[in-house]
Length: 417
Image 1 (cartoon, rainbow, N blue to C red):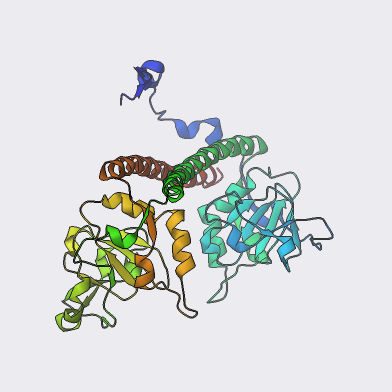
Image 2 (cartoon, rainbow, N blue to C red; image 1 turned 90 degrees about the horizontal axis):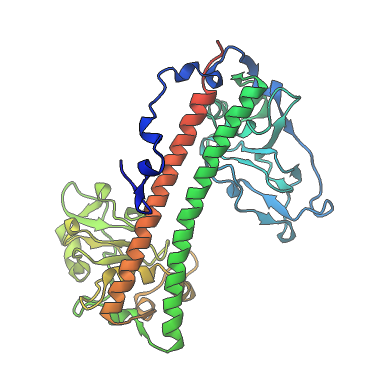
């Protein structure tokens, strides 16, 4: 594949690449030679630390709960502040490995990067003796066989937990120290690529929000904001849908609930179908392709666009229909509704205790910048390019995660010879 790069192509810049071919004897390379590997128990080379302290007396400022560990990520990006109160006393130190023992299927493993106290549902692990290099331990804990063992030895129905004696009994083949070092170097290099991709995706998202913030600030400063209602198509006002759509029919009219658009798109595979008799009194909220939906009760502010395949479908009382007038750019309006500027307005208008929501009247009053159509189109195009770049970065991160899993299994999942 010829990829342009500054007037040249990748293959022009690196003339060796086209000559490279897979080594059919890769399994015989020293890195993959398992003759020196020995079968060990996890507890023979790893210890479960139980150092405790009073965090304030020890000068610790942060605590780590199970909710702060991201599934599949070795990095801790969130924590709590000891000053806000905590009952945790188990201490972790930089370089130690944290393993979530509750609901082990969530695959929560991380390397501590700072001193903290951790939840009782987190094991603090470190190599025992000198047979296991510390940089390899987190990847052992991320291996498929280890997770299967942890899940298989968990007890409890609502909140299953594994225990240390069960984890300690896990058997695996341990490479010699020099191979451990080389394997860890490869896996940490893959992790570095993964983190770079995730950071890039986050940077695109932040730039997108900053662009929308600057637009909102510009129009707020000049008092040139308009109500959301003013951007709606005449004759198709903002409205909610069917109050009681029934429990479902074998055939009928599709009804879209908030649960049907969890990620910005409507999942059409399992929509509730209601009868024409139930739907008829709510013909005002019938949908057309291109309408926007926004959730207004429970989970508030979730958005999706109606595809042409759901023409004349309907919605429930938990969702509002936004039919954007043709003189405005629908993609631009949607981006604004996903901005921090609008989110703050929505949050300030939410009412209710048991079930929170925003009523239609308040939704109509939401203020948005409405420049000329030409400027809306230009902004929408720029946002579209950012969205495509973010999507590519996210897909790349998914590929890197797959590469990480495959690398762990290929490098650590074999058996001794």
